[in-house]
Length: 98
Image 1 (cartoon, rainbow, N blue to C red):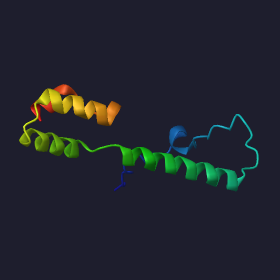
Image 2: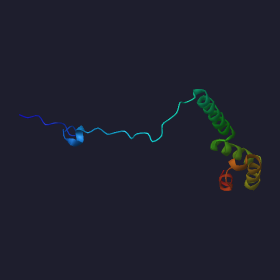
Image 3: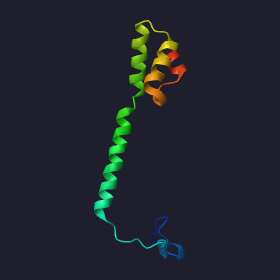
Image 4: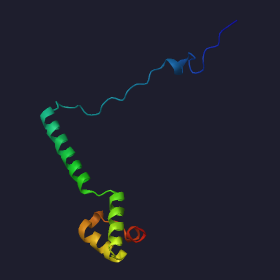
């Protein structure tokens, strides 16, 4: 009784050919690790700075609820947030639906 080969393991021209990796088009010069390290640190500092200045959505909603409890109207809350947060401020509909 002959044993059948598992699917996908058949021998043939497609199974024996190996895929060739594309050759690089440009030769890379020596890498200065110090420069690369400094550049990486600068990018990480910039990312961290941007992350720390952003306010999470749940935090904004908490502030909106607090200001509503204090008696501020949605329009007043929205204007205050735009003045304070600039481009990071929520939309008016977010404040209104708070």
